Image 1 (tube, rainbow, N blue to C red):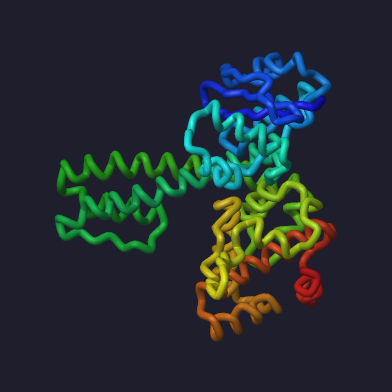
Image 2: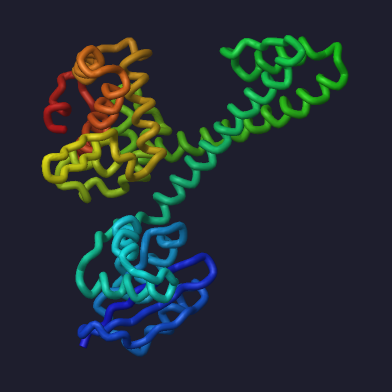
Length: 345
């Protein structure tokens, strides 16, 4: 007889439910969220567990890798689809959710999610830390300008950090209180700028050490940040049978709702990795606006702008960039202006 184990994971505790082939609940319990404790609790069914499942979440990669290392057949389930199944239940508790997950494993009604390696999560952590610092940098710029506006002081917005620092200090040097305020913020801004530079060096070093990123950066307007974000998100290009599938994986394809005579096509789904999608969109915008070179992809995007508008065109070009980058990664080739890669993608 086979058994199916559902885990409803929270940060502190995990609810466990074991269900047999006949659908009967064999055991239920709750333990601290720790791989060794979870593995020990289901040890009595060792060798008979068909699948052990848990939903996607912040601690899921760690738990999934650890439980697999302990010899358990781990399945990571898409939390969105699991949530849809649980909404039909009249009672929402951790115990009931664990039972629902076990029943979904038994019925096969789930979508399995690919669990990335620790190296990919390290790349994501590096990019996330840098992204947060960049956001804080923008906030400090706006905060300083906002402090000075009630006094009629306007600081030009298009300036680098050094010129901005000098301009602000110059206009506030006659006012001790204002100078003390902006000096504290400027010192913090300089520290953030320094930390961003440190992380940028890390990013460049990781990109230079990666053969995949070396190929990806050959694409126009794809720099180290975008290449590393794409590599960390995809990790294994062989997961995609067709290059065009990566567009849907990154949430760059339209949503659609069709029922009876109603058929509505909405905006992009925005599923998948937000950071990778954002950087691809920025790369598409750069390709269509500031990049002075010529390529079949740019010509195609400019034609789309005239036909469907700039926003939709940038999304379409971002999706095409993702397909192109995946194809280059699979083929271990560099981008060329001939357009062959565009046809392949």
